Length: 253
Image 1 (cartoon, rainbow, N blue to C red):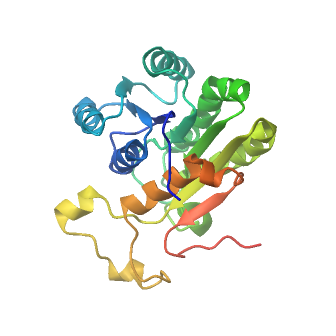
Image 2 (image 1 turned 45 degrees about the horizontal axis):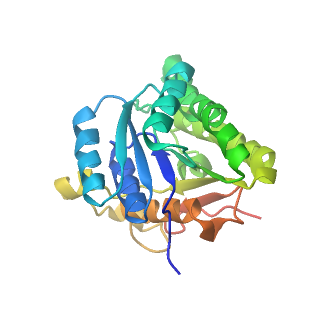
């Protein structure tokens, strides 16, 4: 048994970022062609495109503001024109901002999180799900966060956006399910990325001591879960919020 994404095209938003790059490489290694979305880091996007084509897969880069419906629609048109039907959408991009207390957090930070966590996914669904319905197959995969269950001080804008995203995904799972489209979320913990490896900051005892597996996860752990959900192996999983964080948070029943 293996993850086979051959003859599939996947879009990854925020593909030039730390998690996005590993997701793109992993899905390409499973046989998918990749649409690499970026906002500002064209250099990283082009480097990643070259890596993926070296694996024997097709890849294009597309610049877009994921909080703008017109730009997402234009991204869809470019993707379909160059790579054909997009059957897997991974919503990974999110606006970055400085975390602080509710009393000090700027109102515009709540707006940015709503736009990038909620409206991005609404726009992606409107752009890509209709063609999935026509073909009776599709995957919508959102990158959520363990923070949505932790609700720790200073996380309010991020948590508010991601919990709103959770609502969109659960409703979409019910609306799109009859068309054999699965809609799921992966919720990373505090994940080790290339940034940590470069800085030598992979270990954090204060965080890891509360994790049942006693370590931080890696970007590859997250990418593996995404690739699984994108595949036919996960064809009967939908509406799920799946923590990939060593058990640091555990959804209750």
